[in-house]
Length: 206
Image (cartoon, rainbow, N blue to C red; front, side, top):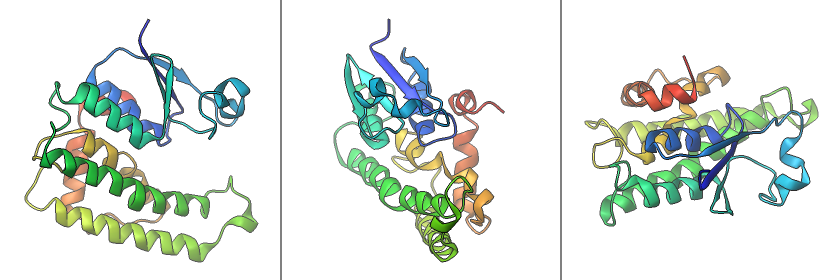
């Protein structure tokens, strides 16, 4: 039995961890949760992740929640040897920088946009002005990313790494919610490079 047990739901922020695990090629056990059915609120799951969210990775019986923490663990534990995470030094700090930035900037604004757009949230809790502000924050953030990718194929050390996975996963779907990616040529080329990888296709077939 694998020492890694991965709890996830498709088309959520767990996708980036799923992708990372596939890139690393390490054995792991998958446990798919049905969020609509409330699997994440069952006592046995809350005992592992009291936040009632995905992703969750259980390592040798120890639960790790929060996608960023999981990605950093996987990078340090497996990624360095496989050329998917920088060794100690300035490049690792660069990877940390972008992975943290993804959470604080991109994913925060994405969450704000979805909570004020998706119909599964009550109409009286959705605010169009907040949604528009989130779109602008995303455009500003993607602009920062576009400039950082000028003349580069990947974010860190100019080779693909888990830092790219941490950022790229949600971007292709933002257009569905009115975020215009067309002005960002560097970002679009980078998305295409990353999502053409076999591991990405295994996480989201087709």
